[in-house]
Amino acid sequence: MVNGRRLVSSQSAVQGGSQVDLNTIPTALIERIETVPLTGAATYGADAIAGIVNVILKEDYEGFEVTAQYGDNEDEMPEVSRLVLLVAATLPMVEAT
Image (cartoon, rainbow, N blue to C red; front, side, top):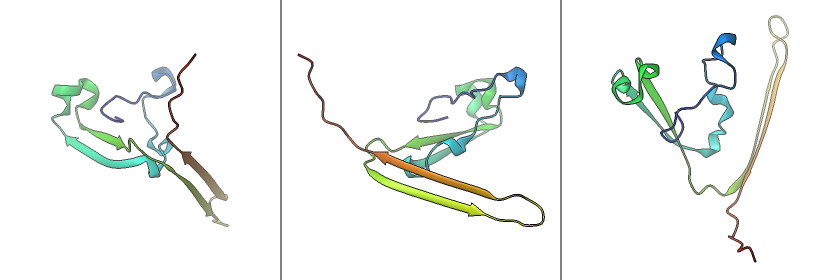
């Protein structure tokens, strides 16, 4: 869950898409993570039988963050690289005329 709302996968369940990739959430936007073990089904339904994880995002994030990662394993796995750019700001309200 993200901010108390169910996060739905972009793939259909027929294609094995019932999983959710939390790696799509930039870590700079996470304020805290809450876990509710075993009792989540009473509140959140059958999808929460084993419990739930609720990712609470920051509401007033302003800033700039660049994250880079590089991996190399010559014998077993190919190279892995990742670059994340996050820019967030609060914009002033503009009235339509």
